[in-house]
Length: 329
Image 1 (cartoon, helix red, strand yellow):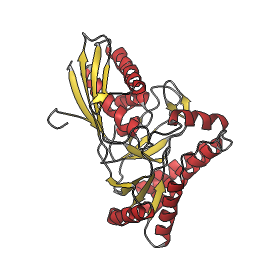
Image 2 (cartoon, one colour):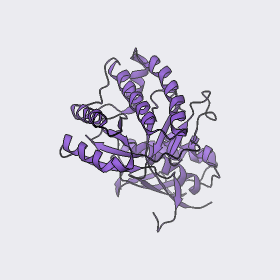
Image 3 (cartoon, helix red, strand yellow):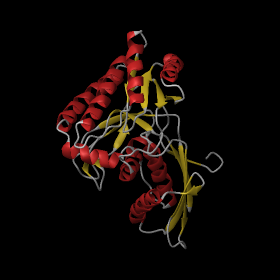
Image 4 (tube, one colour):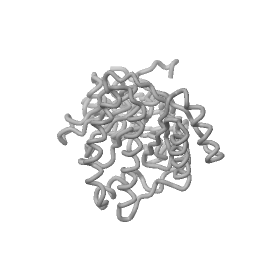
């Protein structure tokens, strides 16, 4: 058993969304989902076991982590320790390059990196499927960041063993994703609360679940044939449908802002002008635009002009979570 391990993971953006849990404790989703792992905004996490420590210590970007994050990490480590049969407390040092809690998938990269590093530090010999299941217990979307490029997360049969992500095979499509950060502040309504409220109160939710299953089937076909236009159309309608369910919740959950709408309008205009570009949004106001890599700089320029002062980043398909040595971390 190694006392120390470092892992890196990247966020993923769902093209067919996960929204709503069947089991809150096990984090079992109500729907399957499919995502693209990015090559930007990595999280690097080092887990160092310290059997003499009386509690876990969690550091985020060089400072003590907020209490809620520290508790979440410690609960996750309790799960790892249970699987390992002990091993003592740990010092966790995380360096995150994506804003936390802003709807930019920081929990996906963060929990995937933590799962890989903690598993090694506590001596667990887990294959990728088991690592995906473990990461899922920290954050549902983290199950997908274990894998690079495109991954599908299966809701399964409601059991812990049945819900995991795996790579989507045979995809040669290599799109760009332009990320427009309208607002990187912490959301007023957390994803956890927004999901709970949507599932419990939105009259549109069940219809979205049914349509999302159809979207996933069509997405897999579109990816297999490398059809960027079909992939983008499916991703955009799935995301807007998810936000519609939230707007219909009681009380409404509204992540889409005036800035978001301005960018969505510009994406629609880009298509009318002949540039294949398609928007998606997660649980936040930020807009991601799927496009051909050759068009990415032009799309980024259009978005910057539409919302002066916003930060825009260009991503491509990225790698899965992995262990790194200290020099490479």
